[in-house]
Image (tube, rainbow, N blue to C red):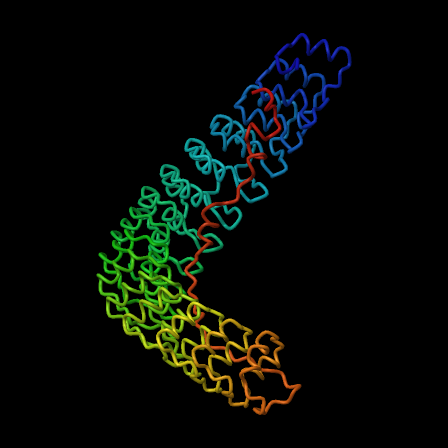
Length: 540
């Protein structure tokens, strides 16, 4: 407390009575830490003359020199160095005094430290130099001092991030300009392939992007997932940056490894303004990803109504099929997007088109119990009983998945209650196999024949017995001819019959851009937050 209050006489008196000069608090703070924090030069000198340890470390590794550099106490800093303070002392996170001074923006301290031999290229545990720290804190004067005195502008921290990546993320155009003028590469890539231009596009920093482009940053360089800077701007809806990139001749139809264009990405993330900009600048609504998805497929699946409307206005084809034969209306039907289905059908989408397995939109609506979608499809001419290649009609599908409402809907529209698959399964067989007693009762009420047999000679009752569905057996045994036999042995395991499904997936994620653009820096507890650093926060 005497040190904190700058009570020099009291300090001397206490030392005269043999109070330990390096006595510590619970955070391992010595009186010298406190004097450095408060800038009490005379007290610090007395403590050092009494052999106070100039390299004593607080709980997180901060020495008095770290504290003096943080608080811009240049006289105390000089004093500490004269008494043997280590200019390269490191904290738990590897911060040296020059890291601390650089982050805080104390250019005079940084200069003094370098003149006394501190290396500007020493790294902390994450590989960050003082230049990384200055860039992160937006300390332009310190950046200037560092680059003029040998700091490596291309120094790479964790994930190969350079100071230029950091300045680009934070929108520090002046620092970006300085770094480029001193030889920083505008196309330096992180481990995930992100350049400063990718990162400025993500953050929407048009001024930074402009500076980078003026210095030759590439418009076409791809991340490891195949995203150009324009893809990134499209993903995050950064109109100004997207417009700038297009003005600088970025290709609106650039495609990455999966064949995605910026328009695909804008559609996925519902960035209508960017999508419209891309279309106006020549982006094709017909481009397909490697699996055959057009931007309209994505908009249909994601229920992006505005994007879909815009794409249709620019000539998008509602009947373009993917490699699995899937149209946008298939996707919308499966997801239950009633308005999207209606929109596509009004634009001449084929309501009865099957994919390569023969699945129509109605099959998919039946699979997912989308009765409201089924109503729209049927009202627009969808056939009630289209067959897949394996012979499944929508009623089979609804029965298999236990979708009671859909079963009722299809039967009300005269679905064939005894239709058979290629294996001879009726909807009743399908319901029995899955143990759906309620659906079995509905089918029987609508004329389903319990005596129909599969290609293996199984009735629905035989299947239920083999699978152990007691309630189904109880329901069927009173209506089934007991004389019917099966060609399967009693011990033979029943082979499940399952309708075809549609499970095509398109990955539009590019999460590494976030990882690359938000570097992991030292924690504020270790790097300089007064509240957490354990260095005299009680004094503030």
